[in-house]
Length: 362
Image 1: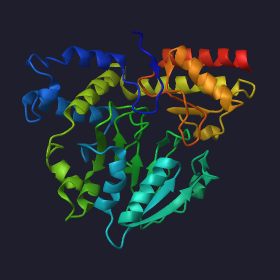
Image 2 (image 1 turned 90 degrees about the vertical axis):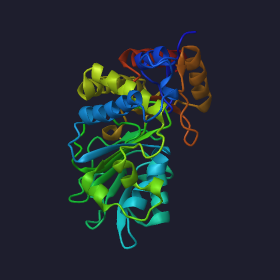
Image 3 (image 1 turned 45 degrees about the vertical axis):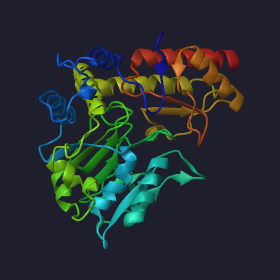
Image 4 (image 1 turned 90 degrees about the horizontal axis):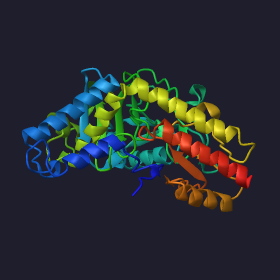
């Protein structure tokens, strides 16, 4: 059976090389006679996978020693609650910048727990087509942190230049663009990401927390909801999602083998340029309403002249081998998610399909 080109927003495509290694090791991991899924999380075999994965994240992201790397469960959605639960006391507040559905969900959870101020929003008539300019931010210098969503999978916007927040640390949900580009980690007190887009399969979330933020975490929380619990035990307080972490390990090694973040970022820029040029050069057949300076390099969204043509585009795209082209159910249209695993050749193929479809239906 021929593999399809997977453009789902998540769970998303995994590198074929990583899947092939996992297939070959599935029944017998490192000659131990059992699968990694059957191996104790206290075994030396799993310990090597676990610690190497942490080291690779540190290496690829250029993290200083004052950052801890945690593997947690519950996805990014759990972090919407864990961040304010750990960091905000009764008389404290945090800033939230709203740029899409996920940041709205994050602030909703924060408001259940503590005080959360909306420092800016770009929502108009239920739609987000940009991220705020620095001058549009109403930041509180006394905020414990300022929360952003770095890339917005549903609406197709992305922060290409992060907001400046002075002495207030940034907390970022980077689920959909972590390890897709080089960033300076120093402004970030916490970076978290569900794995199922650029890091690996669903089932594990990576949380990167700076030591000073860890020190601020409140006492008296439920054990499993405290960052200190997991940091103190190297994410091994309880049984971790070991197979998901194993797959993250394979993806991290794949990124390193391709030349690291610099090489990945270069290709992601090429991919984005190709597909946006196809949209802009279609004579209006394809329309992307996102401010050009905020267009996502991970999730490209666009509309066709009618919903009937959009349905036809999705159906014919699937026949051509492209899976997951339908836009999010809340906004419709088309979405092409071009994460790291969707390499340049794959994007060239979908761009060729777009041009042919426009020529036949325009």
